[in-house]
Image (cartoon, rainbow, N blue to C red):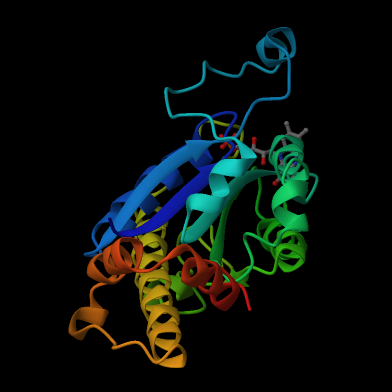
Length: 247
Ligand SMILES: Cc1cc2nc3c(=O)[nH]c(=O)nc-3n(C[C@H](O)[C@H](O)[C@H](O)COP(=O)(O)O)c2cc1C
């Protein structure tokens, strides 16, 4: 068992999906992390999708809202529609009311990635408006800031993404994520997974100390920490863990 990172996206034409694949590679490069990629349910009919020239969906599993509770950290990806996330992704988030009521996502790190058609089409507004979703769930937004380094200052070539998260431009649909955009996506996955894993370990460490339990020597290993909790801690304490993680 490792820190579980979920990458959850909607993609109509494959651009966001391509970023998700790279993010997965980046996150998987962090030891002690298990990465799972999901797509959210489609809300449009086949007829409408056909009229929009959307290709068939990939075989990435379709997530249900309740699956989110299993994750230790979640990266959400979506294409821009009129400057904000697509309705398909919003519909999925609208189905998370049960998780919101019990605040089961509270305290979990979350990141964002996206695709727009054009420059100025909403790379930053899409990310910024998505943050309200994280806030209501009590999630902890993990932006990439300028940790991607020189890649953040590219001026010669068109480059998607921002301090909010990785991104790409689809143009008329024929443009594909560039090498630099893919590198940024990889970076986001790796950076986010490292933070989510360290955060989880830190929370566990606090929990052990606050309950006067012996802190395991291997606390730097999330895998051992989680398995130790699962194997040795009784139900009552598990409830406290939930409270600790969510307070
Ligand atoms: C209804 C609709 C609205 C869109 N609105 C915007 C927009 O506001 N800004 C923009 O740059 N692109 C816009 N686009 C283009 C999409 O963002 C683009 O198709 C998407 O980024 C491609 O990602 P995907 O291949 O993962 O589906 C829109 C597309 C559709 C179908």
